[in-house]
Image (cartoon, rainbow, N blue to C red):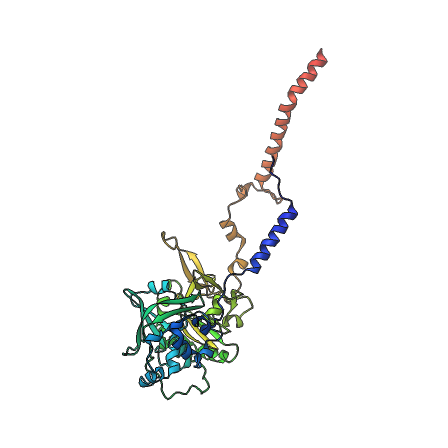
Length: 443
């Protein structure tokens, strides 16, 4: 039996049904999680859940996602957590904030930690009362246990062991059990939680984080940081800060540091979105193409970033460079600062060219300083250069043999040769018929 081909109408209906099914079941996105609702399923965490629910910290978690909660089991909590925190010179709410990491860490992530550990920002850092990076926590691998968490300025009550994973809402909330309360150190005890927050000094945030000296220096020298503080009062800002290692990894031909001051300012603005995006929002961003502050100083559609989720992290593509977010440096509405693995170079100012060195990545990035203010080279390139790159469609005769009538000699001669060949083929085909005809006539 011959197999029948489905009618075109059936194929159209099938395609429409598949499209509707894919639209009805989108990929999972990061959304806010009811933290106490998740913890309520674990009786051994009931005391810690009660502490969290009775503090202002619970309201601060509303709307946040991509979190890791370091929960203390009932048997590991001190008899009076408030007295324990006060004896250490801390406020209980700040101690609880120190147990909320602004990054999703699953057990698999802990097993992949480098030997030096990883510095992770906590909710306490967002209060503005933590000097330098003391609002972060250092997570290191520790033999048989999953990890050890400690303050960057160690003290007897500023470290704990990760006992195990309790539960997880993938990419939204990871709950890890720790051996005891961790107390932050070095914050301003006289600071009031009720005072209105001042504008965030991005340069100071980067300098305090210790791994962003080049970015902080460029910001301070350019004067662009003042623009950032002005934009905080609107929809907020999101800053992608390259680490010192990212600057050290720039190709030798990039010429970033040799750019004029106004061009450097454009590159710095290119690292900033004119809206506040916490990490969870970036992971589930609807429109991947995002304008930057540099777009506002140019034409619409220029100096944009393509932001997507790839391999469990947030990827940023400039058209020249592909980078990833490596950690949260600061996150407090209306400002978010993230570390990125590479310096974001706009395609309007830089271009990737083949180096021909052989092996590995045979390309390098070079600066095209005129590209930001002039049309693309392809728009003004002469025809000769285009023909040099494109193989000729016909063989050209020497200039001396070209006629003056606007047609090359070789074209006319080729046409004449072609016509001659057609006549020969026609004669070969007709000759037998002519012989038969003439033979009949003779008879």
